[in-house]
Length: 156
Image (cartoon, rainbow, N blue to C red):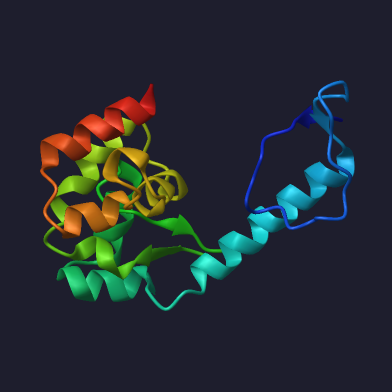
């Protein structure tokens, strides 16, 4: 099975020959496998990062129950990424006052509530924010209207 080639900073295989414009535009099976493996490695590393907490820790931080945290994740009110063992891991920073009220409106503007997608949006540098991540921009006082406009544009 071949898939369309998309440049990625995650693929670290520099030994593969460069394609010319006359070559097949599709990735080989080996290139596809390398991309999938690097994506899985990134997810494992991100889940093990120091800022990721369990649902129990999030419940304590938010002053609520683990059941409520799970409901919030399902509704897109907070970011939770499925943990390999069981349950979810959540970025601690989402409970900061600059971020917390924006999560659900951002999920709606993006048209998605998947934790990985929300996390990727908030942690990816955005040209519209002069290369800042949306998370950093919110922490530095970018208006909610501007951030929702960016999320709406990203969704289209």
